Structures are given as structure tokens and as C-alpha cells.
Image: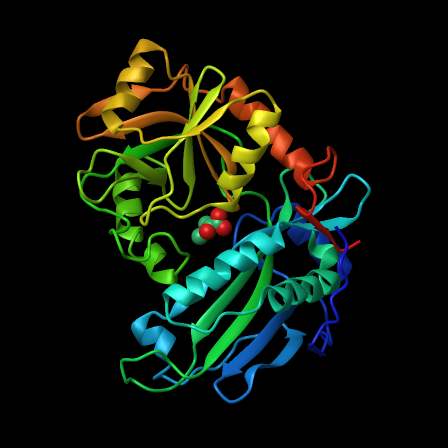
Length: 364
Ligand code: COI
């Protein structure tokens, strides 16, 4: 879909953009989260002016008052979405409207002003148009866009802030895991939980991620790549994997935990629930306990497990470790259903096969 939004942004391009040869070198091996592009989009919000002062500027540090509310009380929400280079060399952003809607829901939950979807998409359009040369061509590479909103008022009064800033930055991504499409090993945490009923687990706020880091460190200490989150009440139901959703494959049938107040509604999860049945793979949203996960692997009924997310895309899970022991899924390597879905999703994102209307927002 092409939609040229009249961009309400003052344009101040970088005076000295990264030289093309250096940019190509960086994009060829970007890792994750460290190779930022030349520009940044920003907006401010105040009760009097609403969203205002939109600008595209060079990517540069910002200065903050030490009493900035977001730093103290965590009024901070963010998103993650990708821009891909298509088969024809053009660039398209994947599902910006779905991310805009989730960004609004996150803001609402944190008592923050909602950024209208059109403005979110106009910001994305403006940044990607200026930094489109940073979108890699190699398979597995893309541009990761990070919209962020934080309470910028300088006060330590504990109430919703009266000033906010929106920033949109982008970095070249070569994939979330250094192992590429290799199967990951996961640790079932019985010590920590990610979210509580009625809490903020179903939105994308910064605190959910800060609170998860110690569990991730525990998983790493067990030689694992990621932490499996169980439900916070009974600690039996599987909910998520790190910052990703999980799918369980029973031959050709997919099962994923249902959305509750403690599960983030992943955009990639939603895409796979839509795409899989079109490939003849029925899907079901149903709870699954960690005991059943283990039992069904032992019996051979459960053939594959994979995680999914914007950053991680489709990531096979090979081995599970827990306090009660370790088990393998299938032969521990990426299975055929996981591989097929990963390839299909990537083809849809790149426009190599058609996806549902409106999913690709073309920049050109
Ligand atoms: C994403 O998939 O975009 C995420 O939110 C993970 C990120 C925090 C690295």
C-alpha cells in the first residue's frame, strides 16, 4: 500500500551523513541495536498545543532535566517494527498501522497521551524515506524502527506528566540472534514472573523489559538463550519467551497461548495466525502447561516449537531446560513447519508473495 502522508515535520537533514562506503560496510554486518541511521524524528506534546514541534533532525544525543518523569516513574512506552527491501529494490514498512494501534494502547495504559495513527505513520514514512539507503539487501537484514514516547516533564510529583516527547529512531538489523536461524535453548523460570493480572503485561512499556533482565541473566547462567515465562498465578501455563510469543507445532497444527492481561499481543503472532491457515496449517489459541510441553515432546506428538516477534522474526526452539530437567523438541534442530513459516513470512514482508492488503506500506 502506498500512502503519501503530508508530513508535518520540519526537515533538518544531517549536514554530514555517513559516507556511502562506510554505510555499506556497517549495513553488511550490523548485529542488532547498534548501527543507527543518520536521522531521528521527534515530536512534543503539551496540554495546550497537543502534538507539535515535529522535526526530522540528524541523529544526535538529547539533553534531559534530571527530574524528567520518565526516568523516575517509568512513564515510557515503545514499539518495534521493520522496513524491508523488496525483490524489486523498493522499501516497504511492515504493518505500521498495527504498531501504531498498539502504541496507542500502551500509551493509554500508562496514562499518556495517544499519538494518532496517521501521525505515527507519517513519522515512520518521513524517517524511512530519508534513511532508505540503510535498509540492507542481504537475506535476513532489515531496518528496525524504534518509536519511543516518554514523560518529559521535569517534576517529581507522582501523577501523569503534563509534557511528553516522541522519538523515532532506526538501526540496521542483521537479526536478533547471533546464531541466525539456529535453534535456541530456553530456560523455564520458576523464580520470576513477567507480568501480573491487571498489570502492564499486555502493553509495550519499558518497565516490562527492565523487570525481565534478571530472569534473562538467570537463563544465561543456565547456558540458555532465552527465558520461558509461566503464568504468574499457578506457574504452570506457558505464556511467552523473553520478548517473544511462542507457537507449539503438533505435526501440522499450531497452538499458541491465548491473549490474556499478562501476554503481549505480538504483531508477528497475529500475522502467523492469519498466514498459517492459508498454508493449510490450522491454528488454535489454547493454554498449554509446561508439563504438557514436556509430555508431548516425550510422546512425539509435539514436533516443533518456535518463538516469534518483530526483532526475532521466527526463531526455532530446540531444547528446554528447567529445574526439573531438560528435554529436546524433535531432534533439536529447526523443523519443516517452522522453516516454512519463517520463509513465507519473510517472502510476504519482501513482497515476493502477496500478503493480505495493507500489510506492506511502500516507501518506494
Ligand atoms: C521486538 O521484537 O520488537 C521487541 O520488542 C524485542 C526488543 C525489546 C529487542
